[in-house]
Amino acid sequence: MSLFIVNILDGLVTGLLLFMLCSGLTLIFSMMGVLNFAHASFYMLGAYFAYQISMFTGFWAGLIVAPIIVGVMGALIERYGLRRVHQYGHVPELIFTFGLALLIEEFVQFFWGRQQVPYNPPEALDFTAFAIAGNTFPAYKVFMIFMAIALFLVLLYILTRTRVGMTIQAALSYPETVQNLGHNVPMVFMGVFGVGTAMAGLAGVIAGPVMGTFPGMAFTLGAIVFVCIVVGGLGSLWGALVASLLIGWMQTFAASYNLRMEDLLIWLGFEKPMLMWESAWQDLWTLTLPQVGPILPYLFMVIVLVVRPQGLFGKRET
Image (cartoon, rainbow, N blue to C red; front, side, top):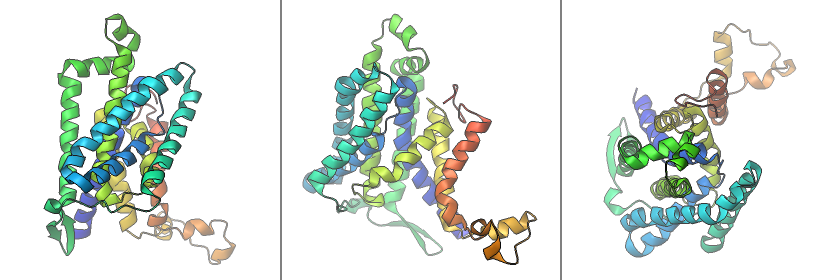
């Protein structure tokens, strides 16, 4: 039971981290139709900028300043780069964002090197919050949970209770109508892109001390972020949250329980081959849950697309 509770908490941290990353991307993807391959790279930039700032002013200044820097960079990239490529179609956009991701990675390696940098939690949160059957839960992870929940509530309020949020939601599905009503849709696009990248930067600032700050951190979470927005549904903040939590728990539980495929197949009524090495399904019988854990989110995405192409909470097909 204690292991179950620990996995719930660890999966919650992982899921909320994914939410901070994919909540901004789902708005960008929905509004502009841009599959931004560089989104996770802004997450990496947030961690590195915060690390650099923390060397001079401490963690808390980096928590505030680094996401702002990343957001401004994202807005400028949309205004002077992506917007000009957008008119030529989706393929140039993909190439542009893919090249941008490579450029950011080279930028990081040039200035900070290829090794992991010593970006650590602040001393004020560097202690154990509580323990469950000998398993300690750091105070910094509690801080991560509350930060993600606060971010969700702020975004939910902005999107549902403010004029700006109403304009953004209308522009997601009816950009031409919003433009005809006198709103500056390109400015909305730039603002949403900037805010989305700032949220990715904030996720990097918070996750860096726990997940590690190294040049490959963008690749580690890059693909799974797209799974979250497809499963949750385009333009749905609730969908991004639910999908992120489901995938976070899925990965955590899969890594913690050493269940064997052999036991599952026998429970389903299959008979184990006497000569395993002669069976065409030899590899299937020897699999364990931790081995298949990394592909479970992608399998889940395929199932969701087959059953509900618009995602769990989406209103239009992905």
